[in-house]
Image 1 (tube, rainbow, N blue to C red):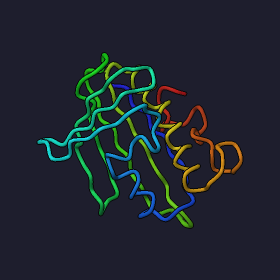
Image 2 (tube, rainbow, N blue to C red):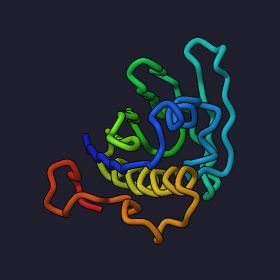
Image 3 (cartoon, helix red, strand yellow):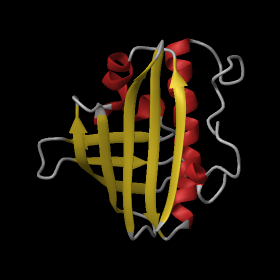
Length: 156
């Protein structure tokens, strides 16, 4: 199984960041998707996403834990993904928040693909809370770890 983790410091209190990240219906505000609808009353709760490419994905909401500030979801239909778990954690970090986006997927290459999108998503989150563009502040690099960092298995 391919595994990728991205992280970025966001200049906002963790509860403020969690209000965006922890709400499955707000995905399109910060993740690069064309459309997102939810059915949170379903069992299990679901989210339906259409990517800019037109690819439609069905997701199952696994965890929305406000105490841990952890959101987890699985892609259960769409594309060629046979197994997937995405996890987003929001952790207090000094004067802001550390947002960690992890993806495990099979086939392995899809972890890299989703990891690329999650890097862009983190940059968008930063822009939302900092009010600036992705190249104008010191903490904007969506891939802050070095290429040989084990947290960035698979590169990219």
